[in-house]
Length: 316
Image (cartoon, rainbow, N blue to C red; front, side, top):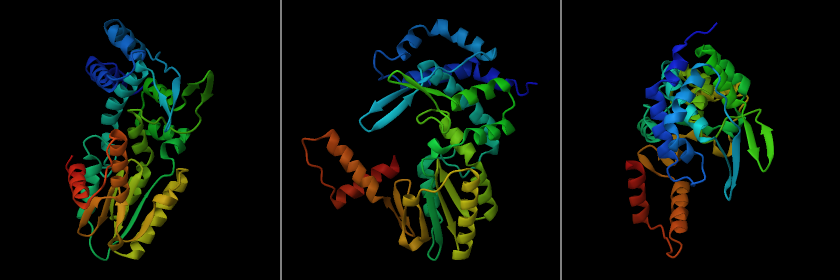
């Protein structure tokens, strides 16, 4: 029995499809002339009604992803039409799940983003407090499909939409003449993935809310501030228990537990009471990027340049 049929109707509606189409055109405006986005754009008047009919009939199927190997690693690329559909799903499901997702999950639309998370954290730092900062090792790659789908089933009851979400997780990737099934993890660079990542760690958000401690999360990076060492220990125990239940683990090299006076890095910034500046790693990465863009000039990072760079980073 299908319930919440308005979800697939919203996804296939002119308003949502048009927003997703405009997003796709802007996102891929600099893609190669061989990319399928240009064929989709040239035949959009013909493709759009067929796409809407396919969605409403529950017949749409995602094609395999193309794995592209780059100098810095590899990326998985959805077809232009699949990417458009995934964006439409993210728009509708994002609004549908908004009431049940935590306001402390700052990467979601309307929650302020990374800078809001940093500002909120900096505003809660006081001498004598204790902090835990961490993230999940290989977060997207370690998300369990069955667990995520069970979470989705609790809040999404349209079978057509659930079918699309299952296909999005259980995707097939093509590379160099070989196909492989993806049995764990969600897609990097996909417009739907940040929302799915937020839902997967909802249990952590809910558990932290019950403690009454300050808590902020951006994607899989989070920070907890406690007034005493004992309360922080309880928070660490809850975090570890929750992550074990979700079959993910903290990144050992990116975890900091201690007094706030020592300072810690969070989302590219260094924080401690009365201090907020770009982290050493952020400044180093920025300088390296500038050096690559302007190889003919030697880039030195003087104190004045560091201060100016911090202003630009934080005010953007």
